Image (cartoon, rainbow, N blue to C red; front, side, top):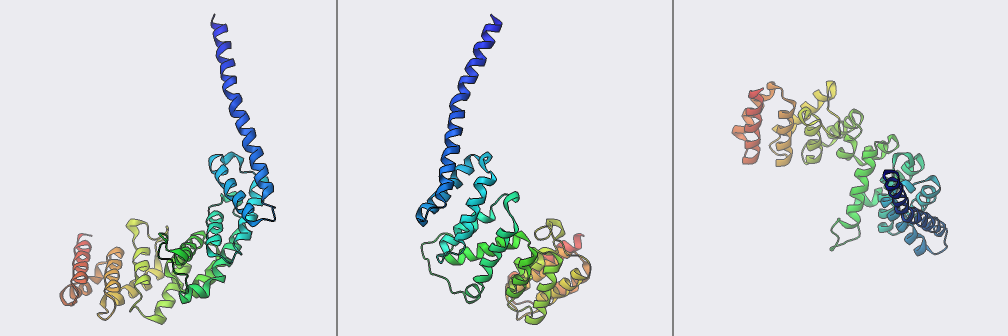
Length: 287
């Protein structure tokens, strides 16, 4: 009876597997047909096929083979040349989310090239207006692309970020990027450089792991400290510059800046700056 019962269960289990196997075969055939459609002369058919392939692969990642991924990736690479930024955005989102085994030099260079080509538009702020866009429209796309490429930490993008001067993007490159940030700050001064001071205050924050895993040390830390002191003391600078200058000094945690902070707490005209200085003083005295 036991053997008979075991046999019945085994047969039932096999029967359960049959529909799943049939579904898998059907899915593979559907995927093959969609891949073939990527060669269609009709651009709408190609795009629709690519989106359907993406959907299938999200639900069946085991189907990500070279035979599928190579033509699909080539399609999205071609879309990076499209005049419509929405098409390029969709392509860039796909390409930046490629699995490591498919993220090759061709893809990386194409993404960097897309940012390079749009440099003048980004610099001028010449974006297509989009009042109903929740994601910021064209400006939101370039902002996202900027950070996505910075997170790749590709050496070939560093000259572009150095030319643009984005402190956030440069900080992803660790000490090399922060040195560029400091050089730029020497030329521009701290006034109005709130974005730079915010980043510098983060890369010295050991307790929170710095910025993107980088914590400044050594000579770079000394240079940052000097810049943060200038930012904190500059009464004409933006309030945000002074606040994050003070916060950065607190993050460094060295008590020799206490007289500077005490003077700011007593004399600064902005109550938020005064409060930040008092908070920093208390934190440093506890150390």
